[in-house]
Image (cartoon, rainbow, N blue to C red):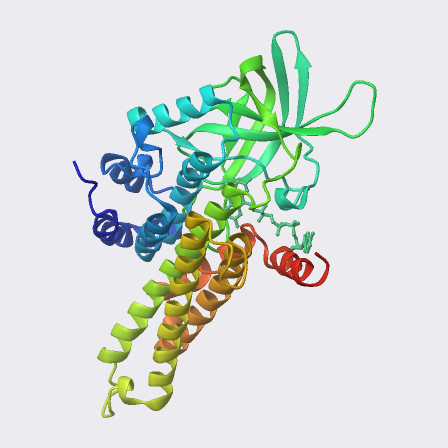
Length: 386
Ligand SMILES: Cc1cc2nc3c(=O)[nH]c(=O)nc-3n(C[C@H](O)[C@H](O)[C@H](O)COP(=O)(O)OP(=O)(O)OC[C@H]3O[C@@H](n4cnc5c(N)ncnc54)[C@H](O)[C@@H]3O)c2cc1C
């Protein structure tokens, strides 16, 4: 049986999500009903490998699905992104013990269970920076004892599997190791503290995960981080993450574009011409389309370069991914800003969705790769490497 047209299905779901988005944004509540729809339509298994019962969606199509869903609700798309990227990346370069990856796939396919990493902490900053977490994993009889607090745990209201980044202090002193441990929603001592109250992406449920005396069996150890050499091609996890976020953010900007265009066509201040005829408005709308199309081209280029292993084309695929993420985010922010100017003062009104797009479009700036790090990576490649 051939796979359905996931982009068309995503467009239908996005319409429903758009209707629910204002309330969840206002309340900062989690869109459980959107995830029920996604679950029912098979989206939670979209990137799970086909040989484990999923749909094995390639990166090049995954980004189109993300953009389409995000045009309905950025929060839902960003939250789904966190779950789906894990399977896509793991298909390419395994990092989990095989038994755990089988379990994640089974959970997603058979029970619609969600997974997302709890790495960030208040004091740690972006974990990609290589900081050492304060959350501790202490070896105890038969396993591990975890203590700590994680922040920005997207999808927290529905997560079942939560790989947690923790430090292991060597008994004799010295530099700690950093490793991931699988925490499950019903582990005694693990609880969600509903702290998420942010400027944008308010319906992602990115709350805190609190770990108080959480005892885990040995089998929950997933592996050390930063040991061994990274793949010379770059990290598959980082690639799926970066392009998923870039596509999601582009979807938010596309929604702002459609709103501004519809508004301009309708808006005729009393006794005057339609604002769609004004040269300034026309320039802005054309500029928005230019920026969005640039994003789609950048993301598609980076995704297909990564998928095919094409390291020619001016830059290696991993560097093209970093360029796409940084540029797409800035383009999307500029596009929404232009859309706000087209709509004018009424765009500030809470009852119009464009002010939500204006807030949501910024969030991806703070997902990896952060701009400054990506720029430094490009500069290093150009100026320092052989
Ligand atoms: C909507 C949303 C959802 C998220 N979901 C999750 C999640 O599910 N799980 C999770 O673990 N985390 C999640 N995060 C957290 C995210 O991955 C970052 O860890 C978090 O935003 C912290 O970033 P920071 O800017 O505070 O980092 P910091 O590292 O403290 O950076 C602060 C500033 O310093 C600069 N900087 C820091 N180090 C360097 C460097 N080496 N070179 C150049 N500049 C540097 C940065 O560019 C930035 O300007 C989420 C974040 C957001 C916004």
